[in-house]
Length: 491
Picture (tube, rainbow, N blue to C red):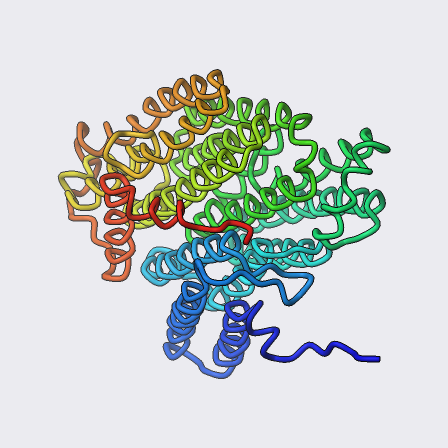
């Protein structure tokens, strides 16, 4: 009788990037505890180094030979491309936190908390076991609860952290309850076995299958800020430190999308024709509420929060389209559209939050009027912010435009024309509230002093990287689409 032993080689092949980030996180935790004073500044830079090393290891696996040597984790292009997105976004967020330290002096604990959260997000992207999925979700959730409330003396931060903790815990419990029904009907927590047994579940327990699906969508819908599960978003984003708001808007959302995609396609794939309508209507409600809700916002952070809700609605459109016509070609096109838009969304959102951090710190205000006359005070920051806002709205020659165009093509090719029309219509609404910031920057005179608004060198690096990425993906989308079209998503 032979026994199978898990070796370090097995763990490295499956979880190499996660191991790297975990080791760096524990090292940074020790360093941050031991050193004092200004020496603590090394902690976030160690985080950046850890992310770069993990990105190199992850990129080496892209389009390689797929493998599944552990039953709880997949080594496939789907998980790898999402991990690259999560690592890139986390690195930019840490640089944003370093660059905004003069405006928002975050405790250095964020250095390793972000790494632990990113490990959880990466586990969510590649997990093939229901228990592992939940562990990844909880690791991401618990660390982000702490990050939101990291300003111990700020009432808004504490309030945001408490709200996120309560709502997030309920969402996690709802998600776990949905997984328990799926386990009960298929007799396994591993996706491979679930796929083999799920047809009997649809045949024998269709009501229970729909119930489990609904609970899973509700649980992850909170993390995605999908309407009507979005009510926490604006308050939490407003109370959280700006780098943490950017992390929630990008990394947490992308990880939840990765987990939802793998679950819906694998576990519920055989019932796609029955559930796609639910996702379609969630997309419509989210696009409408996100864009309409942003119209009345005077606080830029809350405006960006509602913008992130609308973006989640756009990303749900390919979900619905895939479910309506689940051919291999349509699934590949839908996955490419979602991942491309997530890369574009990460760049333009983190860039917008970076400029907001500089302006809000300089003017001691988070209102739109803080941007009055910004072009006269800092032409570079105003121009960069204009690029990000126009990209979020879907202006041609930006990454946001091409991303929305890809989503529209997915809807069109699956005969979901009404979703494509609503995508276009709600994007037009977005121009109105983004234009409020553009008008303040370019058409109004500065209020108070007219001193130039200056960011740190690191902040300018973040803004420059995001501007370049937004324009390159808009003008040369094939630079990323060529890679995505050549992926073997699930091996």
